[in-house]
Length: 467
Ligand code: SF4
Image 1 (cartoon, rainbow, N blue to C red):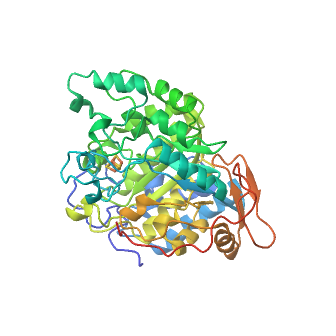
Image 2 (tube, rainbow, N blue to C red):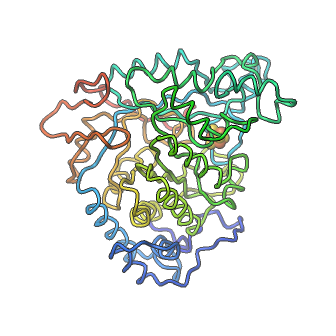
Image 3 (cartoon, rainbow, N blue to C red):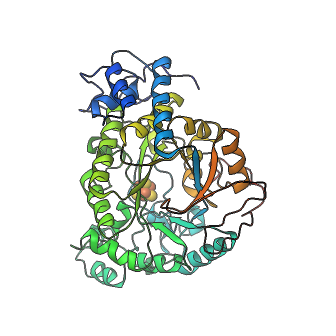
């Protein structure tokens, strides 16, 4: 895809109708910002804006300047982590798609009332979504452990019957107006998701690493109470939670959140929840979802929030830029965006993440969002992690993404070696790493039941937004 004119100022295509106070305007020059980046100096927001726009002094992205930014980021990557490219053997097990939050970028959820036994339409088959019981979750994780997974990642819709535990259920049931706290009793639904604690206990099979409970889910797990986030994450950790995905971040600038996810917690509360997770000793990741209505200044402000959080906690293991997949989303259907980020914007997002986040070691290239070719290219733009096997991937597929839902070790090794880098199997927190040398067959070895046997055969053909 060619560099689109008009994006250098930071406005994605189609975002012109949204007026923001924060604009990509600075007193800094591109040259100064680049010199600071090359020298390894800590960057200001103005520096970041100059780099991510390839200079606010001109319209559009300058291809020559872009290459200079990518080069600086690639060099920084080599200094920080060397030539290894990591990936993890993991499974996505999302518990439910029922959600009423109404984020405009999301097509993962299904209106929760459609899951009710007496809902309209009456049959759960009509909505195409799902809710899993704790028993079903356990079975799925148990099966995947036999295939050699190290990690189960679980991120779900905010089902109105979902509560932290029995005590939380009691508190929600005692509420004067349960709908005020987004609660309906489990009996109202076709399938009872159980409590968050029950789901954690169910998925925590053997020594599998359980990566779950975003700040937004933690908010849901304390709604209607005055419990602190530390209390919530403490109970979840006791139930088996091992680390926290810093998703639901989208853009951590409230004027953007008000447009794309007005029903979600604000930036301050997201940060508060993450600090609490860190305080109880949980490692975490951080993400950005970009390429919708936000501008370049919002992207860099977001990076600043993440860098500050990391300065205070040190618990962020990796940063994951997620390019907005626009098809099948309300933002696109309502004409608020005409598309996602351009390829040049994607490359610059990865590069500036690497340069700006001087306190986060790992930057991930998400092949589910970028596809194989661009995903691999990102490994020379500052990224050093190439995601995981994700045996099932509902989220991206439901938003129209078409880049598949499973990647085996053989394919990983082949792709990473093809770009001259070193394939390394890792644990979620990067503490355990195994360099993959030699000849095939290649399979995972770090998971509790992994013995080096390849996980599955050929990757099934990718399907595009078919549900
Ligand atoms: S992004 Fe999450 S909270 Fe928002 S509508 Fe989708 S499932 Fe619900």
